[in-house]
Length: 201
Image 1 (cartoon, rainbow, N blue to C red):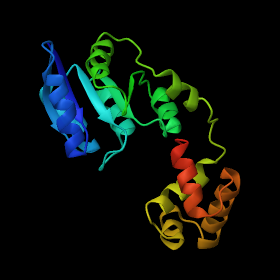
Image 2: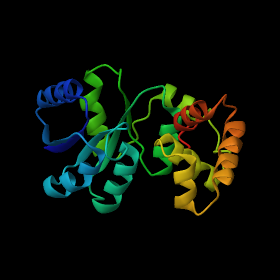
Image 3: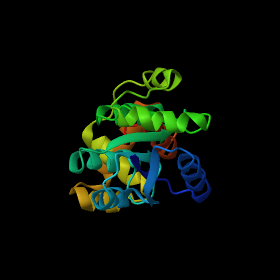
């Protein structure tokens, strides 16, 4: 019996995935969580064989949580739920050792097959997903530009960021301007969107 942990914050999607898996005689859902920071504790409690993890979770994003899961519960394999519009996130997941992905709009019958293949240690990669992921290169941002842009994405002001990083507000604004230029964005909001889509944040 393949034991599954399901991490999905959308109630209807989580219920549908659970219902599909319960139709399978060799798969059982042993835990359901709605937040990324609940994944590792639930896995340590329930010892699943496979964790199905949505990328976009509150508390902690799915890739960060999955990387922690692989480190703390190496016997559990990870199947990432993603959308075709997130190629940068796929690159980030691959860089963290995750090799199983299921596109959210895939036919329902593919779910159980993806779980079995993931459990067997096989790669589960959608050709279109991998192709779109490879279109993005490495991040053009420096570590400091990335940090400043990440802070901005959380709604932190330049003044607050300056205090945290022991910089002047003007220097923080310069880093933001540089990040906007390097991403080819129109403004700060656009730069955040581009960097998030590319998996650079």
